[in-house]
Image (cartoon, rainbow, N blue to C red; front, side):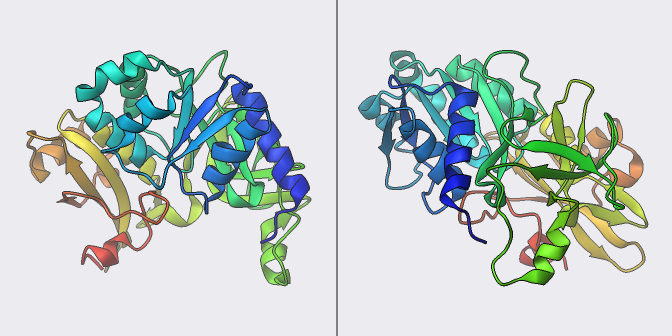
Length: 331
């Protein structure tokens, strides 16, 4: 999937305008530079405005605050699992945070639970800017604004390309209607190389299909309800894993959660969840199921909840829903 120089330049400019980069900025880059998030948002966007970037050898939560002291950053960007690991060590490093106040914190590449946004902002006393990106768009597609309303649980407003919601027949939908998120603009790839079948499936009426399901509200803020291929179909009912993630995150004992599909003989798929508890906290599967029964419809409550010390992650630090049932022996 080729990205042209013009795609990359357009995306870097979109990001730089969104967060108002300037020569005064110094970014603490903890993202891998083989990944579009780190390469464009972490490196090229700030450099395009004359800013500085302090590149670490890789993410290490144990070294993050020492790196803050060394680099004196004004911002950093990361995926949610990194933010969570940093927060776990922030209590012992309040003096470092006070010495180096951040202008903002950015998050992308996976949905950031609203509970985590609130905790980050309370800890760092800086706005958390959640953005939405993908490789085929040379990263950024939408972002919450630096100035103005930031909506926890939403990935923000279109921030570069045009962003719309489309139904299965190629019809553009209105506010409040759930469908597939589609994009078009200068930062979007012209297509996959030597793969006409993939291009025929990916483009509809000039719009690129992201594979993400979402909705746009009356003010234009976009919310993701999940990857289309990650939606759990339980006996014909479509269930968004993210909805269950966020409900479980409201439980005081839960630190991290990922909801996923597990095979079921009669229903096709059923709901399962992997949970990491906070240090010193305890909760049983029955307790969490009872907690969810007051917040979700019965068919959305996970049939199985597994407690783990750590949830498996991909090379870029993202939690992996697809294939998790197999990895955990539930297939």
